[in-house]
Image 1 (cartoon, one colour):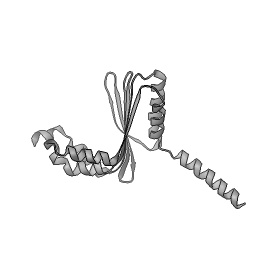
Image 2 (cartoon, one colour):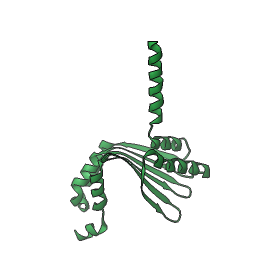
Image 3 (tube, one colour):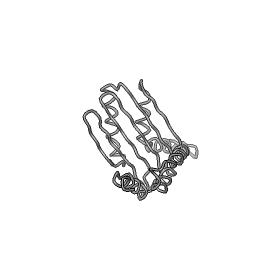
Image 4 (cartoon, rainbow, N blue to C red):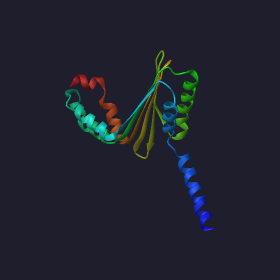
Amino acid sequence: MKNTIYLLAFIATFIFSSCNRNPINKIFDTAKKEDNVVAVTLPGWMIKKGVSMAMKNDTVVNDVTTLNTIAGAIKKVRVLVKSHSSEAFTADMNKQVDNLSSKNFDTYAFIKSDENKVTVYGKEDKDKLKDLFFYVNGDENMAILHLKTDISIADFQKLNLSFNKDKQKNN
């Protein structure tokens, strides 16, 4: 009887853990199976180091504190670029990305030009931004960018305001 309970507990744990999988991982897994794909994953420490090196540039001097805070809260960055996308692949990717809304992701921005569409999704947990996902879909090319973060919403809003062109011109 005891072994049966352990077996049922193990099966339940496996089922619940696979159901709670981040839907962005599924998007990356689907895209990586295709031809003409380049994918890169960078750890958060590398992003922080890159931002600290970029701080030597005088144009971002006023944003040092905010940028360091944001960079320190990035856990991982994943980038994937696909060229020569088929219509079937594009339709599948669009379906998976559109499904993010049902997985507690909010649409932050949608930009459409003649041949490209850019959609930005974010997933918040309490006062933190946990995931930031960019989906760029063109006629034959596609790019996705995923930032796994622990950024506070307040810091993210500061960053958004700090890239105002008028602010940079006045300084």
